[in-house]
Length: 314
Image 1 (tube, rainbow, N blue to C red):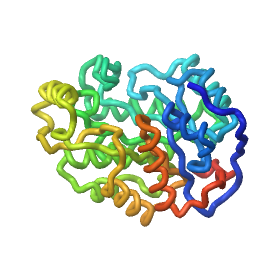
Image 2 (cartoon, one colour):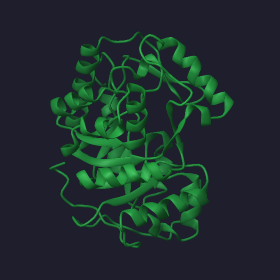
Image 3 (cartoon, rainbow, N blue to C red):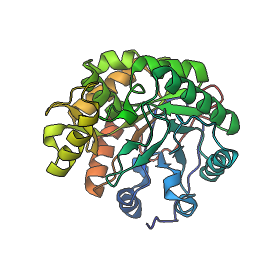
């Protein structure tokens, strides 16, 4: 993946507006090669990219999003924590974030990149204890604030417990971490739990909100046949826990729609996040159009690249 190296940008102090960013993907590389870096304030990166790919983006401000699972029975290993801190330093991220954890101790990714359980469903109290312990350990081992992200209720054992707003709020309270609100994940979880998305969001610790992720979920009936079959195959394993319908929402990372923008606008009315990250990676032209809509919604003056200097109070 080739990115231009002719741009330089630094984080600067500003308390006046919410920042806008997107993933450092091939689609964004196309826009950067077209000198459209003013579409965003930063690029979102992760350890899955590897050190070399992140180093190639060093001319751009970056936010680091981790891929560590926090629900293991075992405390995080020293080498794992050192690995995280090495990415924190390399990306010069002002804060970092991780998924809140899972309803099982061990997980794996299948061929469709869906998180699958590799161990038995945990008791809710055990999942809460594991996640809180490991999140506190990670926060104590790194040099920037840690945010925890809500996950979508995908129909398998890995995603049980951890999408309940009460559990999310308890983890944030017990760890002192900030909240990363993924509004697509909130839409999916609320839909399957039988709540309105606004009701779901208001049950979360919005006063601790620092960053938002946004992308487009889709109804199960809108997905291609292969994806529908994958969802329904997973759903059979937890049929006694949740009911998946043809119109159930699924996390899909498709282009955002008006309902996604409306939800974001509502959240921005009740909270003041530091940053909004668009999680879309497929088509450069669709990415550009979505970033244009978000620039308009955020009333962003394109060309400014800013970040609050004070992050200790996150």
